[in-house]
Image 1 (tube, rainbow, N blue to C red):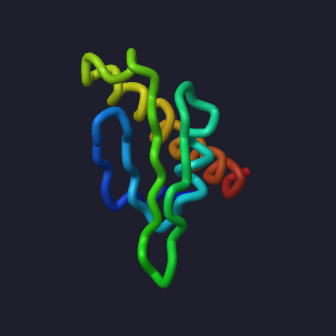
Image 2: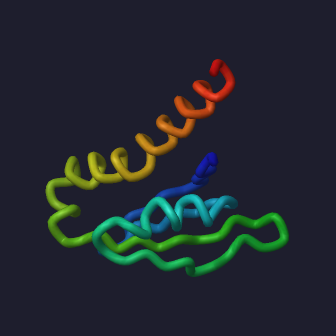
Length: 90
């Protein structure tokens, strides 16, 4: 499933995801170290908000946070695409 993240903001120690597709974002982050909360569900066509508070060691240096987000969010989506392609071919 696509994440459809419209905005991502770091506010103090929280990453704030704004997306119409809150469930895949929430699920992708739920097994990660730290805490995740669904703050606002999507409503009337407006996006919802998911807060993720990573462990402190993910926040410094910034490259660490980028690498972690890539691992949590991008790689699983690529694997889903590969699996879907394999089903279509196979």
